[in-house]
Every structure is written in C-alpha cells, then in structure tokens.
Amino acid sequence: MAPRYARGPFLGCRHGTGLLECDPVTAVPRPARYGHLDFNSPIAPRRADRLVANLAASRPATILDIGCGWGELLLRLAQALPEASATGIDADTELLDRGRANAAERGLEGRVAFIEHQGRAWTEPADLVVCIGASHAFGDSAAALTELHRLVKPGGRLVFGEEFWEQLPTRAQLERLWPDTSAEDMLELPGLVDAAIAAGFRPLRVEAVEQSEWDDFESGFLADWETWLLAHPGAPGADGIREQADEHRGWWLRGHRRLLGFAYLTLGRPR
Ligand SMILES: C[S@@+](CC[C@H](N)C(=O)[O-])C[C@H]1O[C@@H](n2cnc3c(N)ncnc32)[C@H](O)[C@@H]1O
Image 1: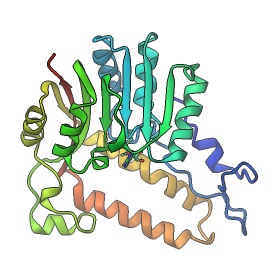
Image 2: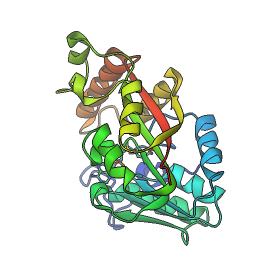
Image 3: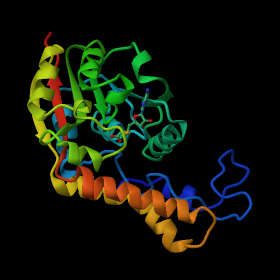
C-alpha cells in the first residue's frame, strides 16, 4: 500500500507549520485533499503496475512528469529504474510537498525532484515523458501532444493519460456535465490516437480504463468530503461542502458516467 501522506497532516491541526489546515476560529480540521487517492487519475493498481513494467523495459535514463501532482507513477517508475533520474513538475505546491514527502519515505529524494513550474514553459527533454490528466496545461489534447513531442527525446516514450468521449454527447447530456462543457472539449478515442500520430508519435499501446476505475476514482475523490461531513455535520462550512459534494456527484452519476472515457496512450517518438 502506497503511503497516503495527505491523510495524517490534513486530518489534524498543525498550526505554526506554515500550513493552515484547521479553521482558525473553531479549530475544526479542514477536509483532506485527495487523502483517499493514491493517484489523481482513474487507474487500477494492476494497470499502474503493468504501465510501470512496460515503461521500465525501455530503460529510460531520464523521466519527466508534466502535471505530476504528487507524482505517484513517477515515484514507482523511479523505484523500478534505480539508475534513472526523475523530475516532476506541477503548479500546485501542496501536491508537490506530498510528492517530496513520499519520495523521502521511499529513499528516492536524491533521484526524484519535484519542481514548481508551468507545464508549457518546461524545455528540458527526457527519455520518458509522462503527462496524465494534465493536457489543460497546454490547451487541448492535440495541442498538448504537439508540445509534448518536443520534450520526448528521439527514440523515447510518452505516456499520455487523457479523457475522451465514449460517444459524442447530445445537448441534453452536455447540460448534465460541468458548466460550459462543450462537445469540442474532448476527442473520441480514434481521434485522440490520430492526434498523437499527427503530432509525430507512433502508438505502442492504447488502453482505456474500465468503469470500475472511474467509480473508484470518483468515490475516492468524494470520500474526503463525505468522511469529513460524517465527523463534522454541523461545523461552519459544512453546508457548503455538502452542496459541493452533491453537485460533484451529480456531474459524475448523472453526467459523465459511461459517457467519458480515460485513455492511457503509450507513444513512441521515432529516432
Ligand atoms: C488531474 S491532476 C493529475 C495529476 C497526476 N498526473 C496524476 O495522474 O496523479 C492534473 C495536475 O495538473 C496540474 N496542472 C494543471 N495546470 C498546470 C500547469 N499549467 N502547469 C503545471 N501543472 C499543471 C494540476 O496542479 C494537477 O496536479
């Protein structure tokens, strides 16, 4: 079981550490943030294991994860590749702190760097590039694939994790999704693979998650709020959190469930 760094600190008060995790007036702890998730994307443990084994087989010396969050896949790749050096970049300092703590816990702090940086502004290429659920750092899927191509060294690999439409949404389906979602926001799976090819990659592996992986992910995401609401039903802010959780659950169960897919494309850049 991977360490769940967020669980401890976020569920207790730690005033004076620079992080304000309790309401300053009531001293009620704030809800955890991603405390029930090992990865911040839908992925079953068996899929993560297989991805790591497949990618490690190409023996990359350098690994770059753009929009890494706390970088769980990056850390597992670094563990599988003891000679490799790994860099994770993200714009969210709190998530990067969790990544650093997990790296230290696994003895990887000398080989894995977590850097606060905008995805689009990174210029140093790597043998293996990972970009999962973070294409918005570049624009849309096609723009991300084009930009990522320059970051993959010739002969290297990209793992691109991206949402796609299982089928093009109707107007009624769009209305049940997040505000301002449009059919143009995502591609269908064949179009996503075509975009990867148009960007200069060859597809080595195309896989899409099962419904259970989405359900695990959304349940894990909501669990931070739901466990907090069980413990603090009448705390200041509880009504807002309840509303937020119910709204999010609606987008999932009435909106994107069985409509939205999530693909992991393993792509090769020809030499
Ligand atoms: C859905 S999360 C995925 C995190 C991670 N790749 C994973 O699969 O666990 C998207 C991540 O992209 C990061 N992100 C969003 N915009 C970014 C930007 N412009 N530059 C760098 N990171 C960004 C977010 O902070 C977040 O951690």
